[in-house]
Image 1 (cartoon, rainbow, N blue to C red):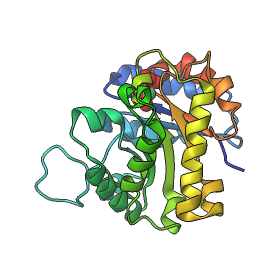
Image 2 (tube, protein in one colour):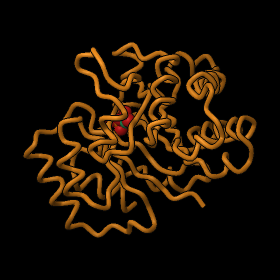
Image 3 (cartoon, protein in one colour):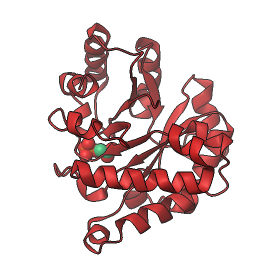
Image 4 (cartoon, helix red, strand yellow):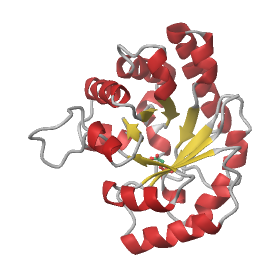
Length: 247
Ligand code: PGA
């Protein structure tokens, strides 16, 4: 049984006051934490505030650097995150790939170091619109996974969640049809089975992300291979995120 994971990716949004208000609403809300995992990935500067005040929620960074320490101005290492009690990070989000030059090779380095240091990772993969229109979306995503998971052992997969996020669905209001998302997540699970065996493939959570909102979460979550969601825009307001969490 895979426990559903509902994850908020705040990207570069929220002021401290908005964060405090969000925390208050979430702490007052009824959420069955035994039945599902809730995760919030805020900008780095709010990690500790959230960690301190939201005891049952998993708190994650949105990115990480692939060196432990040194002259890398502006970067944060897995070791530093662990030292403040943060044990989750997103890696390979399409905005990092497109705007900040994260290649599959860089993503692989980030993933390996993060897991080695004890972090849990949400690894994002997904095709661009041209790739879907050309009908090569599955090959593309499986090839990304092969590169991003290079040298990862079955044992290390305990720390990995995969998020399928078609680039054309992110922040556009266009959600993938739940059947298309299911088909891709199934293809990802089949890849995991070939690469790591049946047990790892059955146990690994595969999320969907891209314009998830209160109106479409139930349909997405009804699919066999969709184990949760990575939510951007609709996670910024507590009431909307709560509707998604309590789908
Ligand atoms: P969105 O973003 O929900 O705003 O489409 C999802 C994501 O980028 O993780």
